[in-house]
Image 1: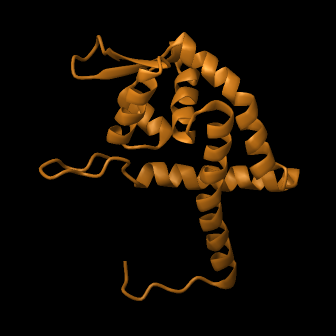
Image 2: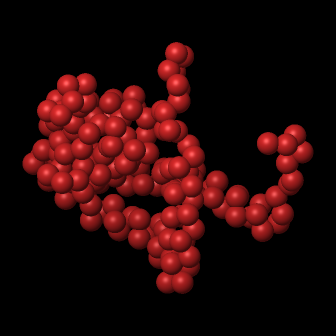
Amino acid sequence: MSAQAPWLDPVEARAWRGVVTVLQLLPLALDRQLQADAGLTHADYAVLAVLSDAPDGVLRMSALATGTGTSQSRLSHAVRRLEERGWVERRRCDDDGRGALAALTAAGRAVLAAAAPGHVAEVRRRVLEPLSREQVAALADAAGALAEHLLATVPVDPPRAGRPASS
């Protein structure tokens, strides 16, 4: 990257300031709603939701980390907390002795089912209702393009000393 990066033009600056505000306030609003209504963090909800979409509610821990956009270390702590509550269980991977699986329990599925209506209502209230149908479609396109780019270019787990970065 050059030492003299061009400044953002007014439209780019407005877009960037809006993204920053959303990135700061939306997780806070979603966490508050989930904590108040279901005793969950948004990160915990994401783990349960991604597992619920997996075949039989089971995923390799590495795939779950990718699906939730979190590091293996952070995911491991989240899964441990969910295990303590009886909502997820960790299993050994039969295919690979080093691999670990996370499995959604019946209790975890019930917690997710109870939390989902309030969470969806909060998402609708905070993100979708302020926008027209055309703006929602444009948001879907823009967010999808950004997500695809970030998933392809940002390693979730930073390299550790002595270990090459994964791609």
